[in-house]
Length: 135
Image 1 (tube, rainbow, N blue to C red):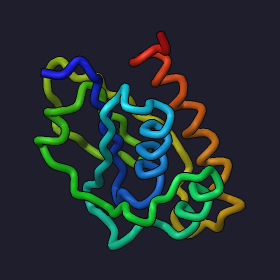
Image 2: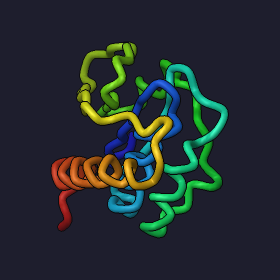
Image 3: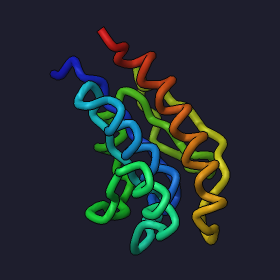
């Protein structure tokens, strides 16, 4: 068992919001949190505007890809965060479930995705302060 908390971000396609949240939390946590993301119906690739706006922050998503949601991933997580897309995750006792209501970046350009990214970044920083405060 690890003392490092694990967070799972879930959205339908795992191509936008959940990918941004995972990359941002992984970046800010610097190893203090294990981060995963998944989708109930994964897309073929990550949204190009999401890749672009994350690249602006120095976060390269070129090696990332949408992953399927599994029961095992939910079981392994301490915190499961759905991204405002109505996903029904398996529910296990002892897990914390949050739903972040966020605009969907699908079909939007970088100018419209930046505010979504920035909203996710604020939420991720607050979550990190709660899960793994800086010593």
